[in-house]
Image (cartoon, rainbow, N blue to C red; front, side, top):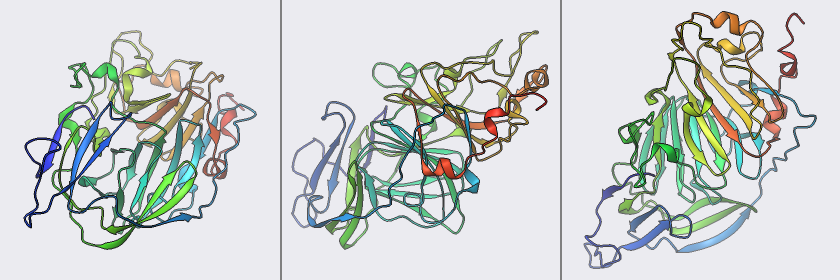
Length: 386
């Protein structure tokens, strides 16, 4: 995270004695990235966070992937996938490679305590609301939020009666704002399309009583159930630059120009070998001869994944794309507006769409959720009159 926060009670100096009211010491936990050479947070627990009662393997259903072969553009209708479960166990894997797993979920239950030991997660909320409870405190989320959960953060997703629909991006590393939008000290620069004022983080500690508490740890070899002697939500205070946070797509300020701007102006996040972008309502180009619709393009180093959230997807008219659709345009495939979209965009003043894009720099394979929801006709949707 690019800036410092302090929540709850902490001592004046790091790694010094911090006494409880009963005279005992609070237990420090330094949570750090990249071998403690990057962002970190220092948490103060009532009980040592190391007291394991048991460690047990958990059987999970494999989600095998298959190559995108023959290579072709794909369209997944995510709203056709089965809903139910929670925001962790209810995920349908759409696409994956060694850097990222992209899933869709429609959940209505509160999850177990869990943590992802493989990397950060970015969860985009398509519909619904709830609370993310973590060792850092609670964070409310709602429709349009991007919620970032740092690797190895113990958390649970709390949902109400309504179904929460979300696109989940599980990285194999750490995700954050694009470096070109940050000063060398981590402050958002003036040309950035969002800034610190748009970011929400936990504001107070979350203390929960309990003993023999289960936490499900997802790691490269599967899932393991840890049972802790005391509830891990016992942090009285913390500070640092590493914590869960949320940023709404409705707070993204689009960068526009006299002629059509390239996709990087829409970027919101970056992680090793992938970027994330947000498309929001914006004024179209104001050159008198401008063509607002995107140009045909071949992103030679990337697979492009676009999640269509809401609005009028003008450049995809006639393709079958609708709210909840996910398209995959792989590297090696030239793509662009569907027939008639360019002409229809002339003299249009603004776009009304909301969408989230994930571009990967290594090819994506198809997951079972992708195979189960695919529209086989999409690859031929650029054939005019057929």
